[in-house]
Image 1 (cartoon, one colour):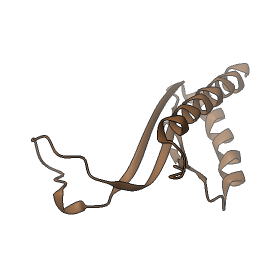
Image 2: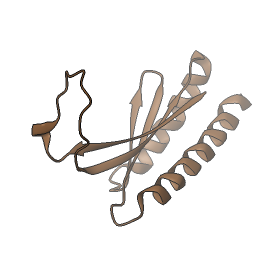
Image 3: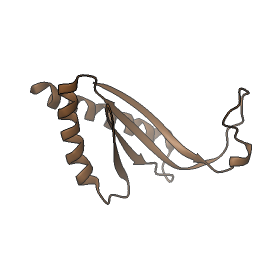
Image 4: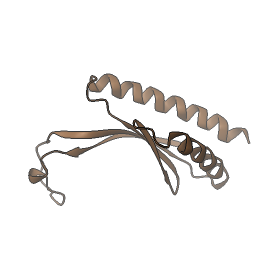
Length: 113
């Protein structure tokens, strides 16, 4: 099982951001950010167990304003809204710790069967 941790936000000033450009661009202000933890599994049998777990987790997160889950062909992505009132690097470090802890628990769950 693999874990990919990232952050995604919307650019506030879309006028100075070029999608198909090979030149270096100035960063723009961003808002509505999400921390993302993508859990991926290549073994088909383990993927079935991971999907079962992600389905249960998704149903528990229904209606949650801070977290949401998106299933993918190789696992799932867990999103957490970035708290803009909190220091970014501190929040990022907490997200990394949380994501890795969940990875360990998922590995234990999937590899028991």
